[in-house]
Length: 504
Image (cartoon, rainbow, N blue to C red):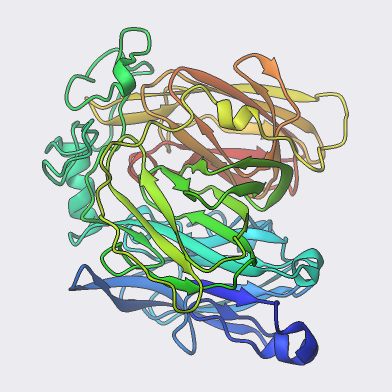
């Protein structure tokens, strides 16, 4: 989707760099607000036209890239035939601009416009509708804010934007997931059927906090492993396709790269309900940032990310020519997508959409998270307030909860502005939950009882039967959303709020 190189352009001067156009992510300008539209678009999915939504500039390109120091100044117009609202995931705008329905601003009616203006935070971020069925309709796009270091580096930048996709309407997909028309979580990654494997009432009165019941139907046991005698649940829906920059491996994006060049690969998991492993194959990589925040470089060729999370990888290409697939592997399954880095004239081989073997479950022991160390930690200070949040639920009934509650019956997490707060997420369900907090950056400080100086994040993945504690400094006095970024979980009420007020 994004391909921007400074190598070979440096001699042309800053003006030439500023004028360089990215193939699919629009460069932002500072002279006037950027016109951005929530709009319909058509993409090709394995030779079949698909009507989806998106966030487009006036020239039709998806997403934004801001230069260092450039403010986020956007005029958003809803050109759809239904109300919408957009959340700027990873940014910390004034609460009124955060983009959650009625917290505090209402949704945008069809034809309505709204202005946004705030200081942009550097890093790999994204933007998406905060109405789950609309995000499932691909109403999302990259939001990249470049730092001075990004500009100074002699490297090529590439964005890998991941989606799961169904030709069915999102409402029908949700009905299948909550209605138990089997399909997801198969150990062989097969396409047995397109649907979910559990049922739930629309508004469960007493959802379970534990996963001891209802996991027999397509429950997942990785490598013969069970946790406490219960099988993990993965992939509660088999999607029609898995997209990398709106394309499948039947026709992947081929990014032209230079021999011996350095790549900054910005990976964004915008999927509704799919965790991915990023596999760079023979192209060795270094993980240098998560959720837009630098970490001590971590070498490897396979890194995972849950929904809502981002990874920045540095890849040094060999001096000789060639083609290097960068694949996104669906956890616990054989499906995969991705793009290809290739030098001019290199032979590019076709890659099957199904791998020979299923990828493992993601970070069930939090080994990847435990290896991450922030480049810049939160300043040390006493803890003013703490709260444990129990993550619960089951596949049958399909009900997912925080502290045994769903949205509308929730108990807010409370704090005063400026307080140091620790939140412990304790997952007692057999599905993993990527927990996202709006309006704040937090640091992972404890993993399963072991204190760490972990990564700065806005979205942390809590695998089954695990505990992760994060620390943060409470910000603007306002209601900030705190929720699971698995869209069917969010749609069925797995959210609460971080309520910051002087009287907390």
